Length: 113
Length: 116
Image 1: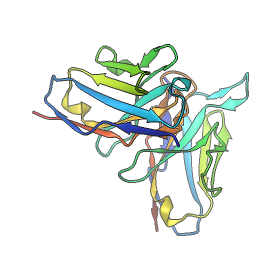
Image 2: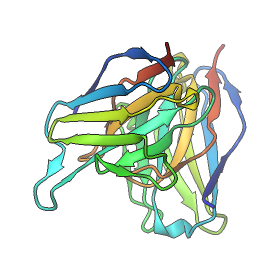
Image 3: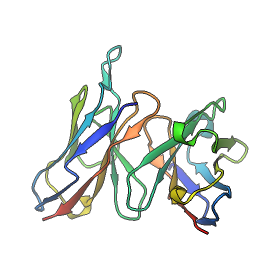
Image 4: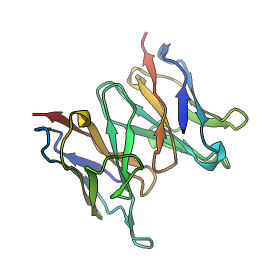
């Protein structure tokens, strides 16, 4: 099974500043035949279900603000919020769907400093 | 728009079973699988399994094999997840999600509490 490890567990960022979340997989989630990374990011606000933000490591879901971006390849990935807004307070999860079983990272809680 | 509406909260005793429903609308039900994910109180997300609406193929998490069954009813565009022999550590919010890999939409969640 592939294990997903996120860092940090939590971070506090000032409004308008950049937030960076890291995700590392225990083996590559890059499928060489199509050059796609089978990696997604989800946002979960308190009391709500998760919401898809990014898939294929860097493709933004329709309607997601462009301050959210995903990058990385192979085993190391990053979710960046370029200018933190109050509504971005949430827990963020990375998720691989490369093989069965898929798996989520442990989550990163983002708060306002 | 795509909507997944789940059944209401349940309280069960250890050893009992629970069956959670997930009614889909806003898209062609048979075009996409349904995945189930659970979240224990204050914890992260755990993948439980997936069912193909097209051919009813299933894939379950190894730690739930033998206790979980996922089914669908295409006549009502509803997916079901049954969990048997409930234990206290099955207490969680159970989510259904559209998709077998990328989860484009999620149900609102169903809290299942297992307590004697």
